Length: 300
Ligand code: Q46
Ligand code: ZN
Image (cartoon, rainbow, N blue to C red; front, side):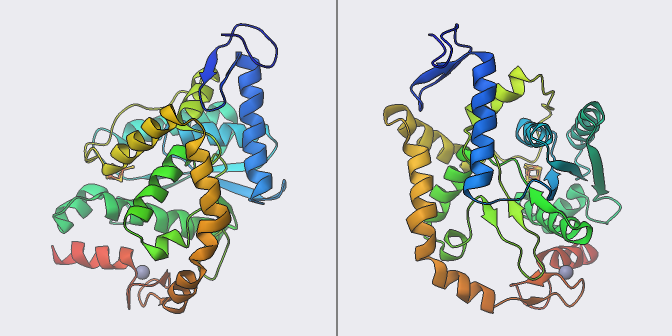
């Protein structure tokens, strides 16, 4: 296969675009797609300080590298979950990456916060992923707010489409009203963005490989082989027979689906209050989810 831009031998073949690219043209394509994703959704301005939530995986590291090279003011944030086997490797990988690329890294240790994930797991006695996600989002938001950053996460098109599919399967109005590449800042919530939303997992993996991004490969021992990968596979099978379906589905949601759930968003916004313990905005009653987890730990 030849590169569709310059005619050299292709290094990356992309079915959904019915095209192949050589290394240089693929990296140009990737750059343009990130830039277009930022501009079309008005994610942030060139001078906005960005805080990239970094896990040591290919998506967040690739995102930080690409934003930095496009001239953005990028800092990283790593939350150390204190999970045996995976957290130390993820932290080391992230620190090495940031040193190499001159990215300032902020870190937060959940063990110091009394919220190490093994402790949470022991206290809750149920699969810990949803609590882990809640705690990470809490600290991403808190630190971005305190330090005046716009938050950026490495979610790609496959992540977004699988989430949308999952939300639509449950007709979860609250989530269907609030998904997308941009969550604007509101009281108690930092602005949140997903600049890789136009790029697939395959494309991001190729970017990471071609740019020599060294990501970690120590899987979390608590990962439960999630239903998300089932949904991703279903969407990928669809994409294989109907190229372009994933981005069409997602675009259609942004243009027509999401506005249809605006009423659900208004209802959600009316139900929020401040956590009596930490002051975070919550829709879950007197305490936010993280303070609820703290109590479960104290009572365990
Ligand atoms: S780190 Fe946390 Fe993941 Fe481990 S406990 Fe589950 S959510 S699987 S991305
Ligand atoms: Zn709280």
